[in-house]
Amino acid sequence: MQKRLSILALSNDVFGFIGHNLLLLTVLTFFSFAGSYLFNVLAAYHLKLAAVPYGVYIYLYYYAFIALYYNQKPLFSKEKFLESLKMFCKILLFSLCVLLVAHIGFYILRSLARSFIIFPSIYGFLQRTYHFVLSNPYTRIGVFLGSLFLLSFSFLIPCFSWVSTINGKDNSLLAAYENLRGNYLKVVLIFMFLFGFLSLLISSLGLFLGRGGLSALCALLTVFQIVCYLKLYDQFNE
Image 1 (cartoon, rainbow, N blue to C red):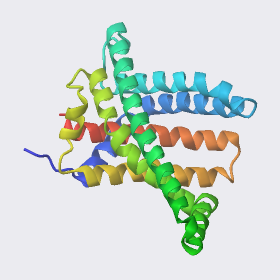
Image 2 (image 1 turned 180 degrees about the vertical axis):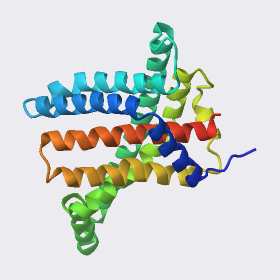
Image 3 (image 1 turned 180 degrees about the horizontal axis):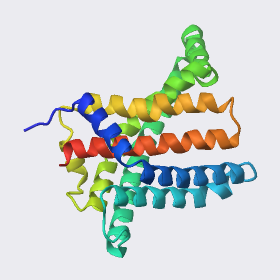
Image 4 (image 1 turned 30 degrees about the vertical axis):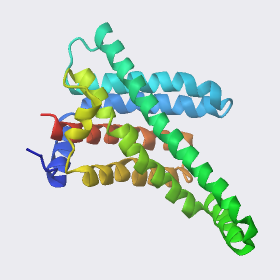
C-alpha cells in the first residue's frame, strides 16, 4: 500500500523534533559553523586544498548527526561505518554517471546545433540563446534549479539508502525509490525548497554579511535541512 506524504505532518514532526532537542541541535550547529567558517578561511587562500579536508569533515559530521538522531549505540561502529562509506561511494558514483550522461547529452545537442550554421538566422539564434543562458544571473538560477531537480533523483533520493545503512534498515537503492512511489512530485518540491530556494536565500543574505555571519546562517540551514531530510525519510521507513 502506497503511503501518502502529508506536508503538514512532516512540518509538525520537524518543528516538534527541533523544539524537543534544542541542546543537541545547538551543539551540532556549532560544529557545522566551525567547519563552514574554517573552510571559508582556508578557501580564501587555496580552494582546492581546503575542499578535501572539508569534504571528509562533512561526511563525518553527517554520519554522526544521523547516528545521534537514531540514537545508535555505539555511535561509531567500524563495520557499519565502512558499510555506509561503501554505500555512499556507490550513490556518488551513480549520481556522477547520471550527471555525466546529461553533460554529454548537452554537448551533443550543442554540436548538432552547429549543423544549422548553413542557416545563419537559426544558428545565430541558438548561439545567442546559449550565451544568454550562461551570462544572465536569472537563467543561471534556472540552470541551478534544473541541476538540483536532476540531483533529487540521482543523489538525494538514493541517499535514503545511505541513511538506512546507518540505521540498520533495508538499504537497497531500489527500495529508496519504491518507498516513494506516488510521492515523487512532493518529495522533489521539498528538496527544491530546502536545497534550492533556502540555499539561494542564504547566499543572497551572505552578500550583506561577513564571513562569520554567512557561516552562522549556513550552519543553521544545514541543521534544518538534515532534520527535514531525516523526518522525510522517517515518513516512508517507519
